[in-house]
Length: 128
Image (cartoon, rainbow, N blue to C red; front, side, top):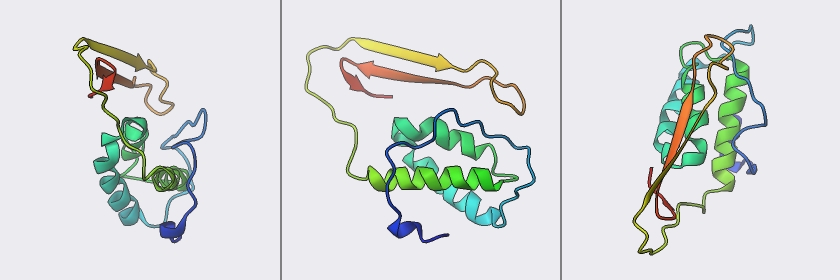
């Protein structure tokens, strides 16, 4: 696996305007490794900044391409560079719930399905 143990961290989990597709002929030569790593990344989705991208690469577990594998490696490099970061909860008397949502409304280039995400805050603390 290209010795990801000593990889250099990157500041973002994905490149800007990344469009993954299941169409292509650059088949990844070790689908078992891909499935194993992506399955393990599901545990890291407690970090909201990578949740969307991990769920995106999960869609290609059946037939992973080299482009998908490069995306998985970037997620791993991002996690390497941000290992000391986490969610910080501040003491607050503000118990109001705020929620935010976003969606892409059919921009998946393979099947035109929509994808959405959300964030729920209790006061200033992200809770979901």
